[in-house]
View 1 (spheres, rainbow, N blue to C red):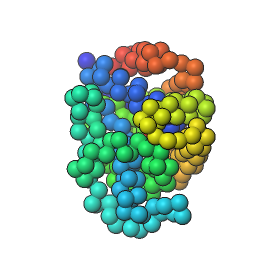
View 2: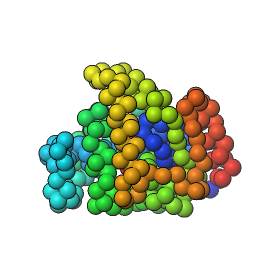
View 3: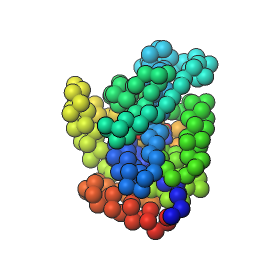
View 4: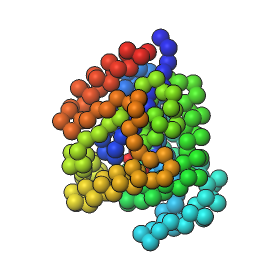
Length: 227
Ligand code: C5P
């Protein structure tokens, strides 16, 4: 059986990572969550105070990019890889709403994208991987054998993300989460470099009213046809 590259792109909180993880596990593939990489760079910028509600100090961020070391380390108990920023496990921190509020503003910076895209291509050069993000099928791996583009209504996505964050003990309102989902959609889709868009060759999956098992089976079937 030949190994392929599977690109899963789409709007925020469409459940890309849950699906990508499950798919990677069942195929024996590596899973790479590229959102975690943009989130870790955002955490770095927040800690260094290179970004706040007034704007981004792009020059300072770009100058310090070589100091940012990102690693995924597999956690056997969890069954997936966690994100490390300069040796520190930041998996919990990067999922918080504070990071979500700024991540799309960091993701517009071309030098950040160049650094992360180069790392992603390196990780995928052996194939046998499922990578999720916003520009995987369009920019990172335009030759990926299978490309999925996930969508769902903003309300359905916000409701899922709200539940997830509440379960983690964050004190947030549904309105805050919905606003964040809409803002990220807008910035991600309208940025100059590698905007979020469905490639002509991507299969669209709208999961507003679709359970996880059904989504998984559909994508697994698509994958089996190609492999
Ligand atoms: O996937 P996740 O919601 O964790 O991604 C967080 C943010 O990172 C996105 O809203 C987007 O701004 C950015 N991102 C990106 N390109 C990717 C993955 C994520 O610009 N390939």
